[in-house]
Image (cartoon, rainbow, N blue to C red; front, side):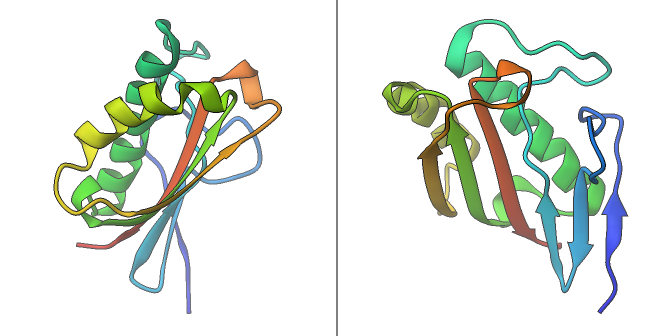
Length: 127
């Protein structure tokens, strides 16, 4: 089985030795995305809801560059800096998955790159 890297200017460039996403076996795997505004090294301002929105927009851009979509997501992992912000994150998250939501794990972590409040990774079917 081969793998193909996904690259798009519509999502933040990788800040380390990794790909924005990988296509393999009929699936697309996104790297963890934070709330970086594409083309900058700046996090979205406005707290957990603004960062969740930007993070999911970044995931959406990687999926679309791979030929998939948010509707095709089957698994998501959410990393939160503070589990007390779960409900606020979840409120925004739900708007991105209005149909049948994907399976999901959410964990609290001590720290995220660039002191982000949230990081999200996804696995989706290819269209």
